[in-house]
Image (cartoon, rainbow, N blue to C red; front, side):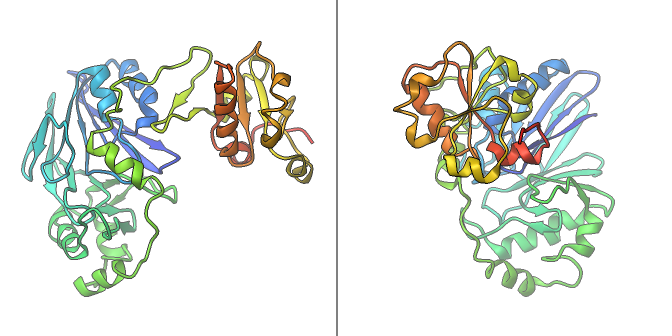
Length: 352
């Protein structure tokens, strides 16, 4: 079986592309809206026929790319009948089988994180995709979207932990760089439900976590109820000057790695304040410094002969800068994703 584990850094989401090697028929699990171009390119490069986008549940921390892939590949969208997701081509129940070529995934109902959580296990029970129900050394929260700590306890103990100990666990998220685990490891080592933990231990843990709601909750849930379908039913228009990504919220971004390797082809606009720039004493080679509060008055200083990429410390104010330039007539414009923090983190070149 062709197996690809993909990662969205912003939401720490894992997506999974699986395909039958002979027929090239494929399925995608838990796609991310902003990664549509990446995912579609991979499908085409591997010469796959995408049959289905599967959702483990209605996500609250990112917008799914399922509708975009349906739009571009004519695949189906499937999720639990209890997920609340509209526009499904098929509602899934426990025991259902999803076939792609000679490969088969079986559906296990694992509610608790949300009322409509399901997991997918291979026919030989060697791999399980657990969504947010069971994470590596953790589990999904249960304090919204009809969640239930008691229900999740039984979903894990009686459903997922009934799988073989060597069954590999692939979750929908991880925030610490862990990519997989096994059922045996989690039964023994999971600090919330492993070892001798009983229902009271588990419920007491989850009900006292007091976590803030996901940052994208108000955007993600309504969008995911529509399976990620934009209100205007249109795909994002992709510029041809670079690998620009248009997020669900309309932010046009480009990766710092691409910018660093195409420095002569773009104009970099740094919109930090002069004080910030002086304190850090480092900047990107040839970057033009115009503080965001001065940009409208000095906009004529920004050239139009090259695509403009904006940057600031964290990549937030530079989004506004890109929007200002776009409103004032600049067409080839994008924000550098993650700002200077990501630029430094990835070891890209700077000058003192």
